[in-house]
Image 1: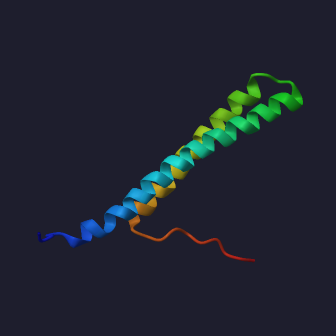
Image 2 (image 1 turned 180 degrees about the vertical axis):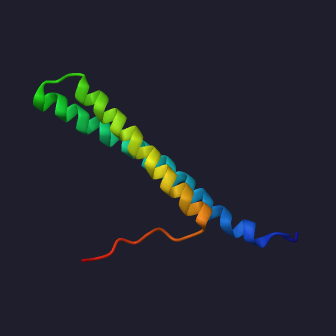
Image 3 (image 1 turned 90 degrees about the horizontal axis):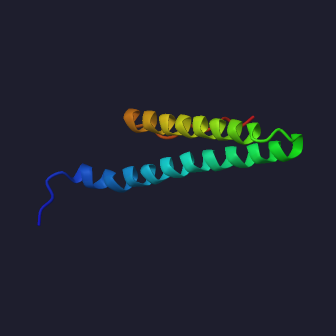
Length: 85
């Protein structure tokens, strides 16, 4: 069996890992926002506004992470590395 397009086969695991990464970052953002909102509700007694605000913040953060990953895939670049002080 011969493979015609070897580049596509080499990129498949990379794109698969980025797909899993995008899903986990989106879900992680939502869960983190919900937990922070729940703590705000418990601490300040502002139910349900902390939870709703945390959910909105988590969804926004999740979509922002997916956008950054999508730009990384389109530009075929490595992830940005933070500069050390």
